[in-house]
Length: 365
View: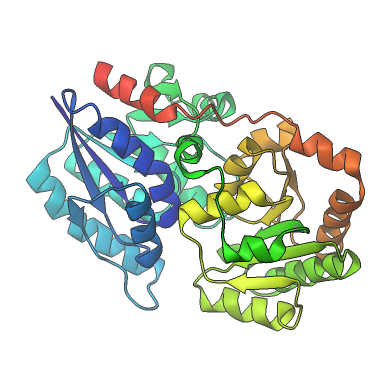
């Protein structure tokens, strides 16, 4: 029996790793599945664990007030080392681009434990954007032995970097697996009742590289457009980062058709996406999830490691300049043909069965 440890620590990782945890645990005759969380996020991580009914075997509990990338990296390295030496898994799975994933992969490398990278091969090819995520992705792929690429384009990125084709598997994205269990018929919520009868705009914005003036520009553009379209209402589940909150309140307070609310649990957020008209975001995972629900996405970033969605027409990269965000947001609200073209574009990120494919690979290797 193969012992597989999954290590993750943030809300986005948990959303994409919990379906895989449950798939592996359902194959108890093949896998001894061990879950280790770092707690890089705390409350937001715990919310996701509850939704997917996942109880960690180990919790490193690293989160501290005002934590820095130095804190996260050092704490994961030191605390995970003892867990790995005790468990000695056959393979450790990490996800995506977080500092938890980078530090966990580095710990495994030092201990000579094989690493499997779920969502391998995504690239912007700009080490500073997104920061530090692009570095984290590339660094994890340097030490990995299993590459679970979500798309053919991700596989090509890996091949271009000299990764062996025999160690790359195109599986689809496990985030789409999550949607199969979280989006519910008949879902209700007071905020959605408030927005009923309007075109609902869902907003997320939190990236480090957008803090400061870029975020102010984004928010000003959103407010301008909505003031010109009285049939819209917006909901912004805001990140816990105090800098994000300050910028949002400075630019958006006093506009009664836009509600700033606390972060939503994953089940709620997925159903809010399903109820929305369109989404403005600087998030990564939403770029994969929203197209599965037929929702156009304006990506408020200068680069994206998910160009497949742009090529397919489900995403539009609009940057953070106020006039560009204003123009593209206005166009989607005013041009029905443009809106329908984006909402009907095919989703390049998979069919919701990525976890099973990953399990099949691990079981056969």
